[in-house]
Image (cartoon, rainbow, N blue to C red; front, side, top):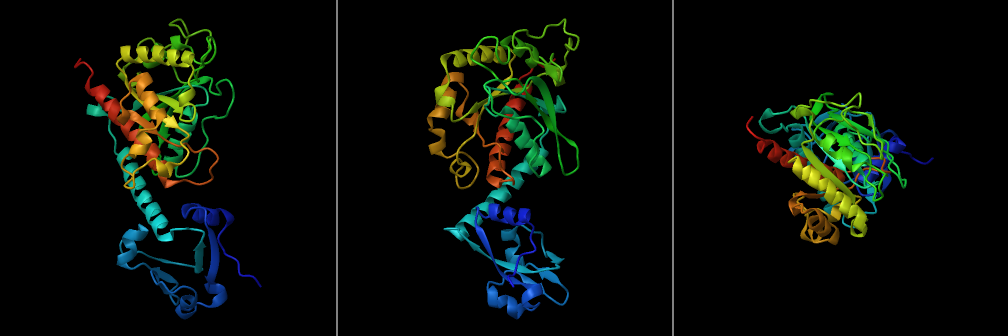
Length: 367
């Protein structure tokens, strides 16, 4: 009779994904091959883990605690012990080591974002406005950020592909930390997509009102009729907390080189409004093809080959945004499981947005 694993399909897929879409071959199962270390060692001779079958406990030696990212003197009980051979990794040790370091760096970034506090506590939550062409990935970026803090993939914001914007309402999304359910100190404001045609997509005349905090959550956009102070939900006396503190121009990196003249003109028109309001600016390039090729080996910054790509240089040329504030991410789209390298890019982008916002807050007049 064939020996099968007790892992569920999702659990097995999670392990395969973590190790790089490998295959797993079951070598040993305690309930079938006998609960003895001798039997196990016949299948697995590298004893990184110490098992006590009489007490059904597993012990992790101190030397492997850091490598496996576990707490000191880790031990726990088990019902079943299974040993697998990982097949399909060309450089198994190097790949697993990279994933381990990526997970460590991801967790460090996550702690940094959770600990963020806006400059001088001028506001309790900063507001980051996502602006960009139709289909650039604005709503997907929010979904990706929320997924990281929930610990699993979520799809709160509606996303899709169409010639016109899927997003028709102005949404102000708070992000809750799945660990304790508290709101984090930032909000992502999702807007209608920009279109090169007049009378289609987000109306440029809505931008100043959005930046000043006059547009309420769930306001229904009208491409041909911008909001006015006469609108029943118009916020007539917004405070600093209602304002936009940072604008992130969102672009599909694969379409950046093909922006039309009309779209670039509209972007520059919008940027003039942003500059007039003194709001911080960053650029966010989504849909990067390979996250692993973006970062240097230490995961701390983009490698020089990525920075020199034409798409990044074009953003710098069109909008004049410094290279340090042109950010690259790959949103979660069709994936089933989380990816630590994707998380690093998304969390790093958030940190840069926080820094840009703090510069804006620090530069406000004293009054």
